[in-house]
Image (cartoon, rainbow, N blue to C red):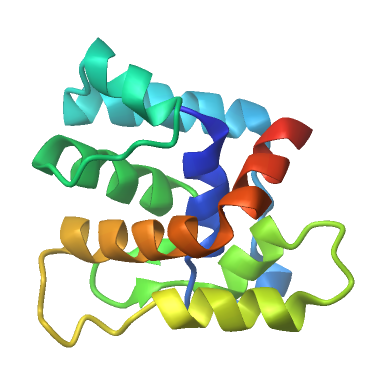
Length: 143
């Protein structure tokens, strides 16, 4: 489990005001990963995959991703992604946040297919990761 999850979680956000959002730290990420790994019953084999940015589409991983996004206030199980929070978290130090917001909005769907919350959060996470892996990796290295 790595910082990419936290950064991506920060990138997938929705309706909260960025002014009210509390930026999360590397320590916050470590704590969230430990708690979410325990509650989602993440195995050591899955942790090894996560460290290489390999997130399989299975129930354990979907629950883990959703858990972190919820703990980081980037996703609401009924309203979805909190885009402004994701922009705030992932856009730290960036002058042009409009492009970042546009990328986040492309991945933060409204769950038209009525998927369970864990699938919804995972779908957005994978979309953003696929389009912005270098951004996520750079953010992880900062922490």
